[in-house]
Image 1 (spheres, rainbow, N blue to C red):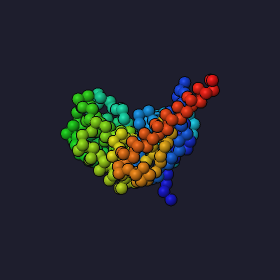
Image 2: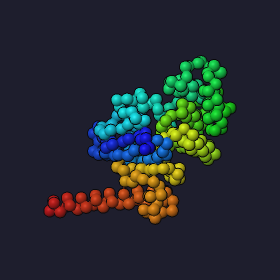
Image 3: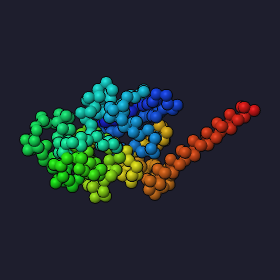
Image 4: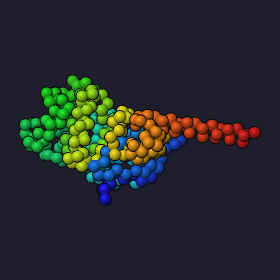
Length: 274
């Protein structure tokens, strides 16, 4: 039986003074080694959900476990088993690229901290240089991050998130700002890592073609899941050739349904007022 690395049951998040829940009683699971995509428009609840899963935001209700640990009562254990590439940068611009990576690796308990790269264990040095090669930044990791472009900083975040070989890798818009060559190299490496290490990958993206090869996807709209299954199932159900076409069609149908229900409620209130 496939071990569940992520379990979400009736997850709800309601922000203070909000009229509706940002995430409204959603449930899904992700198996060990699965490639899972979480899709939806801006404001659908994706960022709220991934923030809860990665222990940076508290839930209102429901049960969430990652790598077998509860995200609230065992948050530290969760963080030890996950890697995260956030949509918004979280780097120290006063340090060099390698110093950012080294601090991250040591904070995750991979190695004891050493003040110089050359003093770090060979396993660390080899892994950093391998990842830097994949991202084509070997000659730049010694430079201060403040001199980097947005795309270059993105590459450093990717290396930093992969250096400790996490059991679950959260990718929140991971290829945003990357050039096509780096984008392809990243996906080749992630797919290789999944095969070699059984890494579970949780992806959010607006590049729908990146989700074509996932094992399972969930689509979120207005805080609710409107589809959960394999991409082929969604394409077949809507008779679409591409996942992007099916994605747009399903979201459009959902918006039309919301408008129709709203109009019906408005008409009902009009009749009641007479």
